[in-house]
View 1 (cartoon, chains in turn blue, yellow):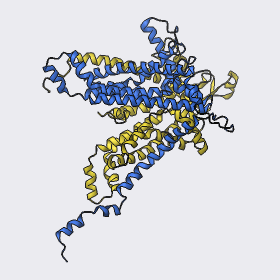
View 2 (view 1 turned 90 degrees about the horizontal axis):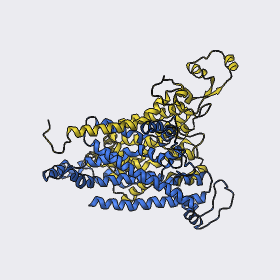
View 3 (view 1 turned 90 degrees about the vertical axis):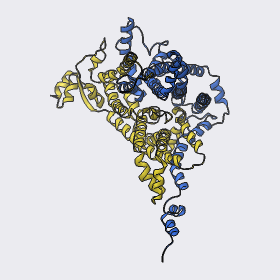
View 4 (view 1 turned 60 degrees about the vertical axis):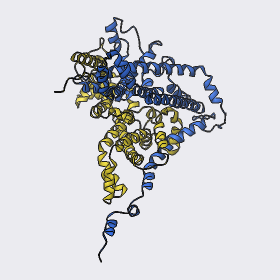
Length: 315
Length: 313
């Protein structure tokens, strides 16, 4: 029997349903692909978070599993917010956060601006500058304590060499007034390349035609810098600040290895303080409330910031 | 040659910019060079004043990082007779004998197992999820993607308490499986976001052609999309590996004996008499150099990897 051409075309084209018969439907496949990731994140992130919130209303202590767990309401929260020591760690964190961001933005942007002059071999030097950022903060932080040793440390020697001061006359991590700067210096050394890379991407995204047009209009270099370069790089710069802000608010590994929060508690950032409460004093309920407050702070600040960032982008 | 352009920096500008950047790069690389240099110094050279730039290299630090040693008296040493191996000879001149292997090799192996294990899992889960988010109409897609990203904002210490309790009741604390699972969850956000970006760039037309040729959706994913995304998958994998490799907070809180990785271990290396900096430096060098090599290989993808694909070059 002869087939009509319509029939032959129909046979050659796999029907939507026919195709689904010998394979999973798109919808089933979508769920199959997404579900494992979501389940894992729920189990390892969200479930613990809910557990933390629940614990934060109790006086539970991990090291006393048999003691009766009491519901204490908001007591933990009130205790934290009225604790002077915690406000001091918040201050230490703010000092660290503000100075690292200021220094990294200034140095990072300058470096990106210079690299964007496209001198010979700039890619090689960029890669070298980026190296510290990729390394383990704990391992590197630990080694910096060696560089910071009075007298034998390379850092003290270099400072002594440049300023004429005696390299054994000061101790970066032993001195109350210097320790906050010791952690800022190492963090800046490590993470300036990150800000630099983002600024570089921003600078490279500016089409040269804008500068050519400005040149035709006889705009000075200074004017071009402030009216073209800065506004167009700003969204990138703000993104870099967001990433650095979140990361440094959580800062733990580098500082714990460098100063351990000391001397005294002058460099005890919130994460280190929290670790002390949770895993040294074992005040689990109290530490959980502390963790919730920190998380809400990061999340709140980040959301406000992202809104501002979007406004800048839309301009 | 290119024509004259008003936006091309002058030669003098280039020289000026170049020399400043090179100066910064040399300063920034100095601490890293110092780690490597210290690892080849003898203990007395390492703590010399002024700091020594030129010294006779020795592998003592590397011997020390892999071994534990004990101090013996002169007579005891004599009674032992001649040293049998080169590393024995090396420590013998300080009046020490090697009493056994240190735990460094074990910690390093743990880092390798946990790093690679979590990376493989992260890539498998991440590629699947990224493909689904890129190609299918997933309900609440934007919310789910934001949820995945937001897991990255949590301070590790904040969720460490319940994870500690959870792992303890499941028998996962201080095990490779537990740490692999944990690091996979930590890096999953990175892997999904990055891979989604890479898969978004592959034209849908390739798969459509494959589907018309009678492939099932899964075959199209497997035989058409995966090979095209190979470079993206490889660079994502290295990022996951580096992050898992460098992780410290969870490792120090949740592992102690069995599954401890190298980052919490290296700072605890001490010698027979006080801090043994060449040994610490040797451990650090062995641990850091692989990452440096990967960084150089990855340089084209760095930005994308570090910003979760938010910035593309």
